[in-house]
Image (cartoon, rainbow, N blue to C red; front, side, top):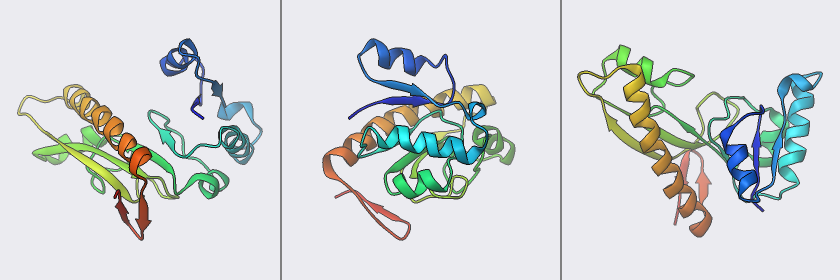
Length: 170
């Protein structure tokens, strides 16, 4: 079953999903006494939909051990750099500061680290001489979205295996 969840209200994706008849839910971290309580509730909500794949896009929260235990081999995330370079919140800014000529986006299976899981796909985006953090970020987002749609389609249609750090889509 398909559903859309968020960690805060007012997300455009929630409105789009609801308008299309797709179930939605919101689990706000601060609404729970502890981060572990939030992780338990989030895990229960997601598990209730029996997902084959859990896709994180714009969900800037680290999930806990319970969530990873339930979905770690089928929980994917996007990142706005060519990992393992420039992990964390500021990939495009860090890439520009370093002076790279090529930036990009990475789709990966989430593990307990920060942007360290097995890589599913990557897409390169050239860094232009007049790029700012904003212009580079926007071009990366466009490439990242195309990559996400393509890769999720392939994962769902063809399946995947993870052997150590290597992801294979038959």
